[in-house]
Length: 455
Image 1: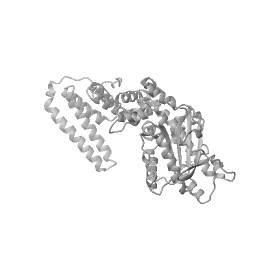
Image 2: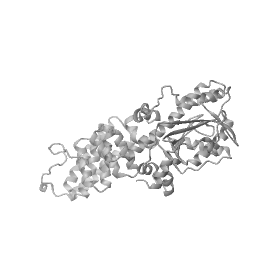
Image 3: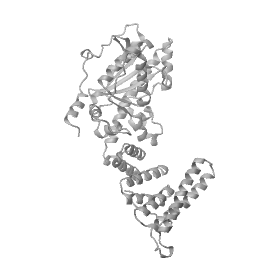
């Protein structure tokens, strides 16, 4: 359970927003003139600071509702391959009033010094709902003013939440700050990029993990109260802006602003979904699709949470997985058991794999290792080594009937060498063939398939 101080910080995120005039760092918007069609179309006001002007659009939405970040999800989402977050970073992460959701619309998708972020969307939880503020520059001379306001917002809320923001949005903005030579890029306390957990959780089932696809197939956006029936194609957004700069129609810009608003709301809803999945106990895992559970298992494993990874993987197998994915899941489950020192459980899974004709070569090799090193049953280890070698040679013949890939040839050669050397060693260790008693359950024995529980 979060500490009392953390509870108060979370409650502060739900307090009603203060009036704009009460915020000295939040300039009041100047109302548009009657003849200013762009401001009227966008519902925008003019913000002025010592660098000049830009437009700002402010809205509050009742959905998505505030999602309280759990300690488990924060730890997993912020952990890197190298280390867990520092105590100071964890403290900042635990205060949702310091979170800032960010999404940009740019003049190009490739990045580089010639790419501008002409629309920057920001969002945060406020008064139980979601506050959205968007900065728009009417021409490139307004970039300094826009970046200055962005720096203020990030200083207030230094925990950034994005979708592919670590690879695109934030590096682009850091580059734009550097290009000004006068506005220092604010330092982030933490950056949660939801693309990577989303890809781990749903790519197996959905294929595409674009934010719009996730909204439709995972988040139930109609239930959240919005839709994208008249949405702007992301690939056309740069052209709409260039057309506007050349004196073209204004109407497409309203669609771009709505698109950015939907992306921000989708991003907040996506965090709520990921937060719930990472926080759920094993008893709730049965509510999810089996492919999503296998993806969740792999995400847990990569983040070092092997206990939850094992539970999610076993549940995915119990629900049922497609044949090709089932082989991978069993292999992962056996590997996790072996890492934890549960060698008998791992052996039971490998024997299931051999009986079910899935990844037999790998299973035979692992069983030969198990019976040689752990069970000290050298005859049985030798039998699995020989069966594995025979299956490997059949597999190699089948593969090279259609391919002459040198990489495959090298891999088969290495595996064959390991099987041959292991078999030779086991021949020396095993008792003479005439003295061996018949072994029940040996590979190739005429008996029914094993029907053991995986866990």
